[in-house]
Image (tube, rainbow, N blue to C red; front, side):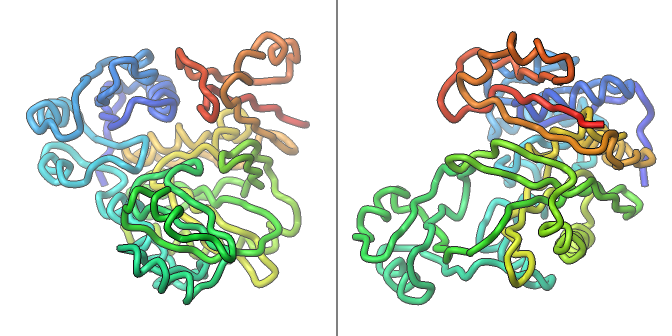
Length: 356
């Protein structure tokens, strides 16, 4: 276990809002952040000490960046893994590359969950057009066709209904390798958000109830209703097993469906997560602060609720334009991410309210 003193430099791969909030949390603990991203307009770079604007595959720039850091983390899971192996000797990388490898492949991710005792939706791998026919014959319809790699917030997906012409769905995913998932009948969606320290200690935040609209998280509420809390222990046990198996360090989020037969694992995010944004004001120590604590080898902070209950609303697209009316309620905690262009489906900020 290596403890980094304040004043050390934390490298963050990715320059979006998660990197922005990580940088703010790191600065409060006395650390400097160095952002590495390909977007010159990085909103994380605005609040960080250093910024390298370069492509993920630019090994020269990536190596120079890594050599300037005392520890490296990432704010999204689609960082190319290959180049990371070339810089892992420069500075510790938390969470581990293994977590990225698993999270970037939906088939590997589901098999990993099953290996550790989890239940997933029925699924079949689809590598070409004929195997799509085989997959749907095996798991039935309705089903969801998802690209094995990349895709989030409903992107890279196509919903298949009984009797559909499968050619159109194969076109919708641009003939990319996919996984076909059978539909899961569920009552609620929820996430298990944990932090694991370098010494293996695991702490959980309250389990939020997540409500999605058009495939994008709209609302997270903690604590969750009883129907979710009854399945919390089983979901947490699976998430902890997976974290231990990866020798994970940092915040890990696992998303679940609450069904009549228990929790069904959906996917994992090896990073801080949108469904945990409420923890900034709603928990004693936020997911961002605890991620920094974990990767720097510090003692973990208290993950308990700071109020009786907490709700977090995402501000999608033009919803962020209501900032003035949102601020007219003094109980609202408004977070705007500094993104210049408001587009439909784009996360522009969030607002959190605590109820005492």
